[in-house]
Amino acid sequence: MSRLLAPILFLLLALATLAQKPTTIAGNVYYGNEYNAAKNVTVSLYDSHRQLIEFQSTTDAGQFRFGDLRRAQYFIVIDAPGCEHYSTDVDVSMASDKDVIIYLKSIAKPNGNLQSQTVSVHELTMPAKARDFMESGKKKLYENKNPQAALADFQQAVAAAPEYYEATYQLAMAQLTLGNRDDAESFFRKSIDLSNNKYPEAQIGLGAVLLDTGKISEADQSIRAAVRQNPTLWLGHYELGRLLLKQNRLTEAQSSAEEARLLAPGAPIVYRLLSNIHLQQKNYPALLEDLDTYLTLDPDSPAGQRAKQLRDQLQQKLTPTSTTPASP
Image (cartoon, rainbow, N blue to C red; front, side, top):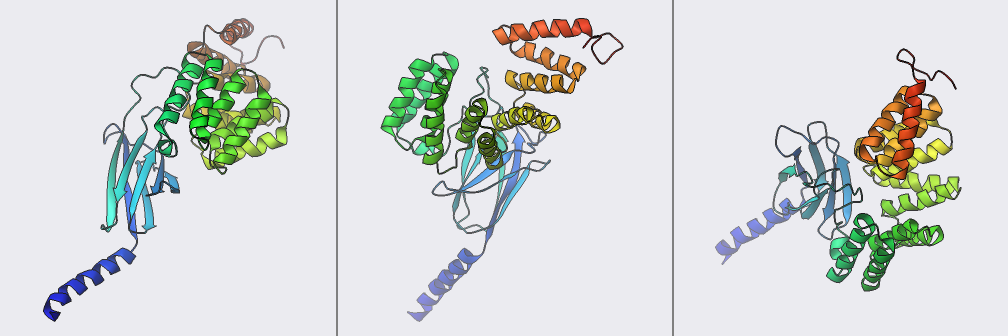
């Protein structure tokens, strides 16, 4: 009996010792193939209960590394601008280290909607009925431009899942589109509370409303908190740029606007912000470039028509050899 038990005890002791040693999850992220490393992409690591452990940006070679991990199952999530949502389970419960190779896929048919098309880990825990109402409402709000109809869908989503803070955020966005700023502010705050201050999109929305109503100090706190929490959200840098422009901190405003442009080069409002900054700086050649880019993205809207008029006036005032208008 002792001869049979000895190998089993040895194996159990070896497994117990192995379980106590820390492990590492590392890897590389690429856009499509090994020749196109995805640098400065945020990789988020969750535990088996989908609780965020930490996140980091990839190196210039697309590398990431999470060390000193206990042996367990983990979940990796990547949401890179212009790419499909990526997530995968990684099991290191019985492994010393794990190397992961990740290939990101480009979004095949961008439709101009700059709202996030990905589903968060939290949303996956919501009832399917609530998620269906959520998707229907987003389509009506952002594609069909029908905020009133979208409002009803978002209300149904919240009724089906009261803890669905992403749907509460969309309720705020619909109210904001309808011009109901007080209601929008209330729903943004409720979304933040439901998420335990872990939903930066709602912080950005609240900051934007506070900024538009002249509550600069509160707006500053809300927007900066969102940018710290998730520096990859272009809208956070955009709203921070707007805030800094209001405070006449032009150099910082330009830096934030340029960060927003880097993350969302197809967002027309970013170039509108840059044009306002360059106008204040009297940097007219840069202003002309902003207007040119804006008109390629939004030529037909009322704002686009006004941009065209301003561009024509600016071109008339600029001489070929001058970097400033001929008249003030």
